[in-house]
Image 1: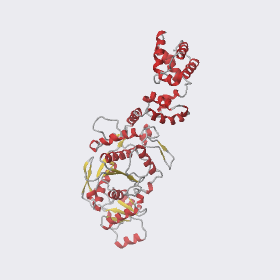
Image 2: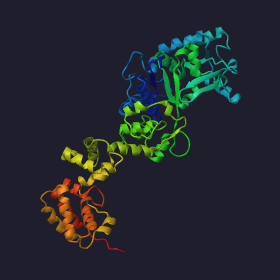
Image 3: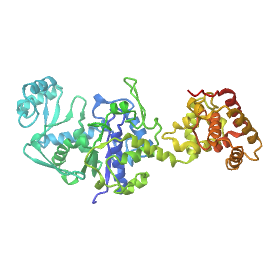
Image 4: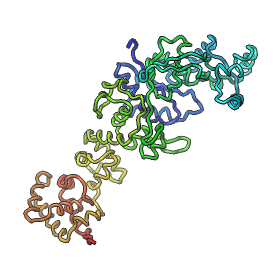
Amino acid sequence: MDRKVRVRFAPSPTGPLHIGGVRTALYNYLFARRNGGEMILRIEDTDSQRFVPGAEEYIIEALTWLGIKFDEGVHNGGEYGPYKQSERRDIYRKYVQQLLDNGKAYIAFDTPAELEAARASKPNFQYDASTRMSMRNSLSLPAEEVKDLIDAGTPYVVRFLIEPGRDVVVNDLLRGNVTINSSILDDKVLYKSADDLPTYHLANIVDDHLMKITHVIRGEEWLPSAPLHVLLYEAFGWGDTRPDFVHLPLLLKPDGKGKLSKRDGDRLGFPVFPLEWHDPASGAVSAGYRESGYLPEAVINFLALLGWNPGDDTEIMSMDELISKFSFDHCSRAGAKFAYEKGRWFNHEYLQHTPDARLAEMFRPVLKDHGVNPDDYSDEYLTRVVSLVKGRINFVADLWDQAKFFFVAPDTYAEKDIRKRWKEDTPAILTELIGVLRALPSFKSAEAEPIVLKWVEDNGYHLGNVMNAWRLTLVGECKGPHIFDITELLGLDETVRRIERGIASITPVQQS
């Protein structure tokens, strides 16, 4: 590559960042880092009517949480700022005027009512070479009238002058050369006098040029606008510095057809936003991956493989590994179904590789939510609990269901387990077991286990019934980690207390 790679992620602050936007940001980041390049965060807020308070801050917080880092941007500055388009009005005016002076654009005064009437009178109306002379603009009106309208403060827009009949070639690194005839393009609005701001099309081109962007990596929904952007680069005389395009495939519904939407997440029970979002207008709350218990590393790994593969069967990859392997050669052109259950699998896998001490810290808020003060337990105790049950969890919150008996003694017992394991002689056997436990020289799992098992064998007791009845008194049901690991953590006094409570509380269920 002749130029240093520079990419940009340029979201609009019109609401929470969709998970599809996160993947776009991720692919930009991986490509830039793989090629020793730089990444910019730019906020495209030219659509003032759709601005949502808090959206910009949300975007920055979400990308920071995910570990997607920017070399320049609205939040950390840089030599090509400002990085918020609403703060670049003076810059855009210059380029709007350049297009007008060079005859590449014109001023249009058509009111919304006049445009609506034109659409009603002509099926598939398009503001282009075939219709522009019948509308109210600086091409169809006398120059004096145009000046009078501007001097009177009449609202207007600036439209790009599209010459029909040209084959416009868009070089896409993923899709190859895409050719579109200019006759199907309309004279897009580039600037609105009402708010003194350009539209996306002009601001995008000017900013990409001035910020020296070499690659524009964005969703395929922007592919139809690419020919216009090619023509704008030519109109400014910037053809030699035009960036390469990559239009990424869509994220699709997990079931059925079409683009992934928030409704799909609500319907199937998974988030479509990286962080929880509180809508400032309606007050509605939408789930986020962070608050749902996903690790950022797992989300990144999951998203990277939606539309890309490393060229082999590797699935678990750190950010550094993703960077080292990333290439558009292994990107799919087809949309990727959003396999949300695979996302849960990734989270499970990352939790298994998370140090137990870190998981224990993450478990502390969960304990508080269930009325348990984690400060009543040592770090060593919490870490050991986590180590025993984490193999069964997909999320940190799942630790409570798997480990609550380590903190709260059961007060109910599973009827199906009582029916299967609690016999008439069980109370007597467990009372005898208490004596065996009290006589143990050590309550450590490895030392207690062979002594208890020998006692069961020497007395001819049914091992499954004894051990499961004992487990029932400790846990409340016949599940959980190795029973001697449980008792070592609970300690002798608590173990005996729970056995005695079970003997007093559990009544055999009559077999029907």
